[in-house]
Length: 282
Ligand code: ZN
Image (cartoon, rainbow, N blue to C red; front, side, top):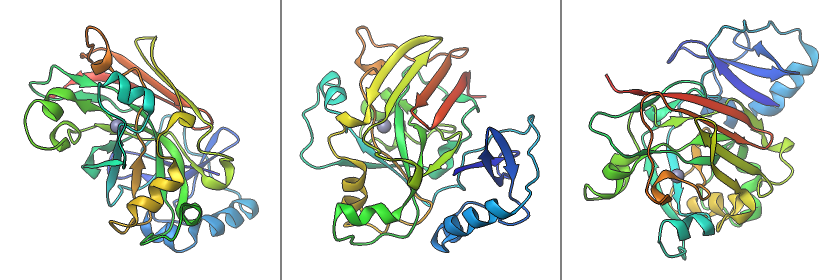
């Protein structure tokens, strides 16, 4: 199944994408959130969809992020061997973990806002993993499988000067408004045969910048969920962004960054595509 949300920011309603048409599920569910996922919502939803006539969502409704605001957004740094190389960083021995403000999550076609005083706003296409059942001290990577709700495109927009030149940790360069377009849909895990077999790409103004494949991840999705659960409880609805392949602006010679008016497009096999216009912060 493909979960979607639609409507104005902060007032999104839950739906699904069925044969290319968005369907409104708001008569049955409040939202695609922790309560829904933990309560076996996905299997109940499947039955409901098979046996019900569902109203269409009108084509002019905005696409929201496909899940409710996550409790937390965990990101993995330098998780592609080829990206670590372009960043002149050693291959990590353990996953590099950082957090991003959950309020950065916006819809897949919303704007990317260039923060005030930013000159180094950069792009990062990533495979997003949404937790489907609370996970704590998982025994093995195989155990992670039943704790994953599904997958979506996650755009980990990053301000490199804030991230790397202003002291401290990376949080300042990762948590600006609109820095995490998500979606357009969450593809449920039962429909993803192998999350390490997905091609991904990103272009700016039609020019291909990132070309990657989840097969070159250093730490795979199941390992990451197991690993993170040793340090924190992953709650259903939490988002993990699993790192970006090569081709970010920081790695170019000379480096290249986003400006107002630029258009960024991202896609991952089976997960659709995003498109964002860059605008300056007011
Ligand atoms: Zn990232």
